Image 1 (spheres, rainbow, N blue to C red):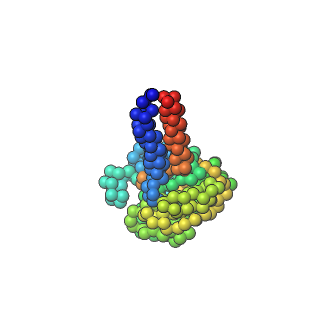
Image 2 (image 1 turned 135 degrees about the horizontal axis):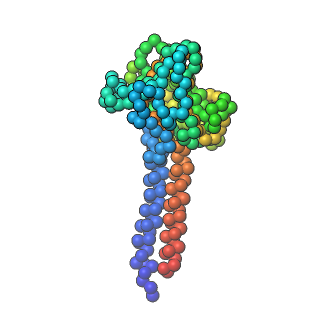
Image 3 (image 1 turned 45 degrees about the vertical axis):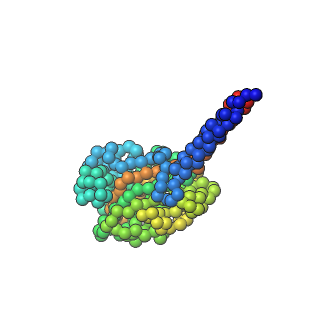
Length: 273
């Protein structure tokens, strides 16, 4: 009688459980229990430290409209320590104070996700500008037909989307849970974002659920844009922008890896019997 199967059975079971637990743990980390936890697998991020102060941001920002009669899009040092990271911390100043031409800042084809969370911190001063810009997401090239979402940013001076209100004169955290797929997506302890909609979180609070405007194209979102029309004026500061891809695919990858590990271990066990 061969004693190896009995002696090795507890060890094999431990390996099986470790593989499964690793898969579950990694999947949970990929999309945390609340909207503010995010995956370590990030496809886009910019804290503006890699750009030259006093100039428009370079890559990965691929298109900047910044000319006479418009305003300025500039990386600056946070001399007033607005974001609490020190006076040498670099931030983005988006200032549209002209009314002759439109202004935009775009990062194009730098990420890809049907379901994504987009997060950044922003500060809008209590100034004379009460008009708004837009946050535009595209599924494909920058054309009207490929728009995934168009959100007001600063409507009535303090609103994102149609009803997500924030305070001016303080730093706010905006997080968008964007579902541009054809299926509902569950997150944050059972919260669900419907297909073709966005959940808007401000400072870790769900401020608007199921916002949707100009959802003309489903599929992977690949482009993010700030855009201000020629007639509008607005100024705000941005820091720490992060875009996290659709987490189900990430979880699925590790699920497949875990199942593969289980299959291999079982085959090895059967060969020893």
